[in-house]
Amino acid sequence: MDRGKLGTVKKKNGGETLVEAIISFALVLIVLLSVTTMVRASISINRTAGERMAGLETEMSAIEEDGGPAASDTANGSVAVEFLGERIEVPVVIKTEGDLTYFAPIPGGLTP
Image (cartoon, rainbow, N blue to C red; front, side, top):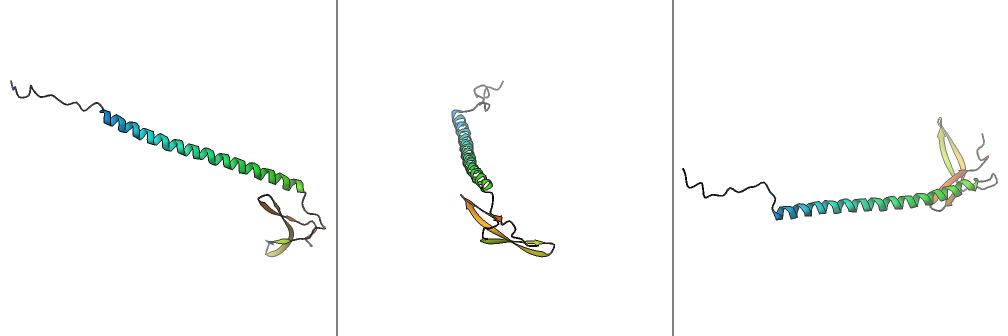
């Protein structure tokens, strides 16, 4: 028998040390904080977009209720359309409703 091997203790590498557990916990915490920050930013962006969309819908409703220009209105702009090689100038009234700027063609403004 070899008595030199009896006195040695074999070191086990299977378990975690306290330092490894703390480092693992810190890494998981950092990842969770990052995800939480991204989710909160996403919620904020969606809320802002919803508010802007509600405002645009209100302005669009006002435009629809406007009814457009009358034949007696004076054009303050024009839109050029090219169709089958022919250029057509359409007289329009340019209007603004809130943040929206739009144009409406004047009835009877086109002559054949």
